Length: 341
Ligand code: ZN
Image (tube, rainbow, N blue to C red; front, side, top):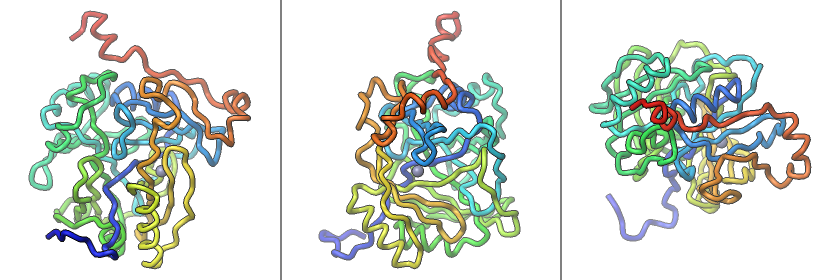
């Protein structure tokens, strides 16, 4: 149902997931896996704004479009996390259905063990695997993303490239309170329920979104509580079109009794954070200004970018960070030079 003139008090809603942020171990291994094996573009190499002695990597599509982004804090030597309730336990990445066979071959060629492809929710096929730190990932076939161009500059042919985030699966003890936040405060819509071995899953979608439109909530009652650490998701960020939309979403969250942080400037977006009642840390991030604010499209991710407050300390910061190299030349190009397919 639509109306020509939305009421002034129409609830604000998100356009889906903006990014997913996780904690990784070794920085170079993280680059090799996400840029090299999965073929995502490193769209920003910067530092953790709360701890500039560690990196913050942003991976995404050609320009780091909201919804395409996975980010990592590589904390070498930090304790490993424990998968459990109160977490975004699974991060799903969207591929066009025709790319499935190519991806099964690619995972095998890189020695990435995966489960058998599984059909679910009346159509999509999901392939589950882990990153080198044990983070749970899935490739999910999604006809809607075939229309989005893949990145031309990566090791995976553009038509088969991962387009971005499909969605996340939250593991919670009980689903009702989390559902109230997803539907009541973020404006998602419940579309399906499915029984599963590890607890019933309810699917919520952000209407109108292509990338990042799915949040699955698994009621994993009785499962142990998760612990944040290497190999686990730190938070899930949802999109706000601008500062006004973020303000409206923040008010909705606060009025529902949750406490949200003030707006924090993350250089590439502005953020607020709050913990949903199931225990998962949520962020609401603005689409602007985006990753082209301090680099040209060609240069994205090639040099260390620092926010203005850290620029005067660049020399010390660079000296403290481990040296890294992008996996170049792209693996597909290298294989072609060597006479491979
Ligand atoms: Zn974030």
